[in-house]
Amino acid sequence: MEPRILLVEDETAVVFIVSDLLESAGYIVESAGDGEHGLQMALDKPFDLLILDVGLPGRDGFEVCHAVRERGFDGAVLMLTARGEVPDRVQGLRGGADDYLVKPFDSDELLARVASLLRRVRKEQLTPVSQFEFGGVRVDFTRGELWKGKNPVELTAKELELLRYLVNRRGQTLTREDILHHVWREQAFVTPRTVDVHIAWLRQKLEDKPNTPQHILTVRGEGYRFGK
View 1: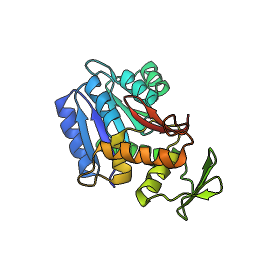
View 2 (view 1 turned 30 degrees about the horizontal axis):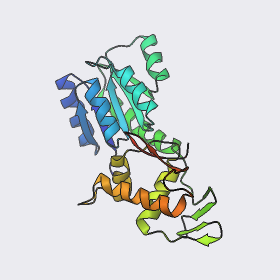
View 3 (view 1 turned 120 degrees about the vertical axis):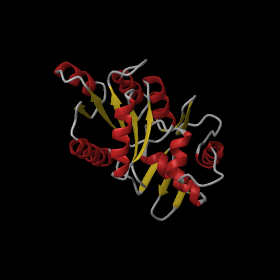
View 4 (view 1 turned 180 degrees about the horizontal axis):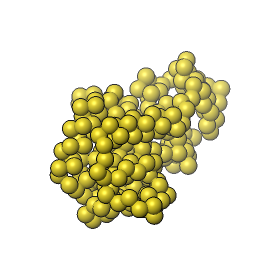
């Protein structure tokens, strides 16, 4: 699947130029014109890369970057700005940005940095596991087998895929939209409620106390997280 990029920029001309450039390179691009809208989009949808202008209306790029990192965003962040001073670059990098590009920029340099950031993020993400244990549960994702204590537990193919995704993103808060995008891959007629139902089924089968789960956790107003 093509990488998804969110461009948060208030200059219409820059949005048009950068979006056209990235889409021509094969990326899926969405845009927002202010910090508040950009932050909401970044939290509501799965993106691999955020391109943030520093001088945004409302929340500036530094604030947006810090906010998405606090909420568990593990994609790449590229700060795109007219400011070139060292303190600004340091502030952006300390706030969770991965790279910094000063306007005016060369199109080839932007594309090179985007490609490099996407490669880096994929390498830094947690290595997918083939076997995992938690709370008396043992799962072999390769064989599609799971035991709770000494008893085998039957999971549907989608339940197993959902569990694998949660485990491979353990410790991260995942929105329902993010889970739908990666587990159901935007299949028709699938809604966020589908995620809730499958989470409930997993808890019934795997948690000792499904109503007070210890492993598959709800993050109120955001989504779900595996582990603390």
